[in-house]
Image (tube, rainbow, N blue to C red; front, top):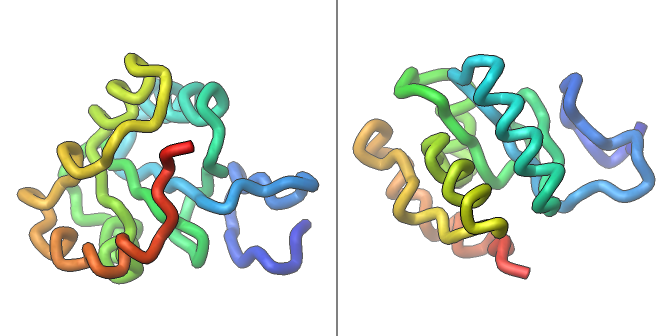
Length: 126
């Protein structure tokens, strides 16, 4: 286990030699959508998937509009709070695409006020 990671979670890849610098969290998502997210992350790289927002989390992908603990922690940390459609379009484009059109700022208005924090985080474009 990587001692610098505080990510608890069954999907955390911290035991591997290389850990992606960003983590992604899924919330309010049925199993079939979770499987899609896992497949896209495996195909495109750039993320580890964890079950709770932690220091390295940059993106929270929601399968619904419930105000979960991960949504609230993601907003507080300045993470992107995104709809599942972002994942589908990334799959379609075969690359990580800009997050802005998929941010759930209508459902979670506080998400739009964390842009200064987001600007400090490295974008996903390789």
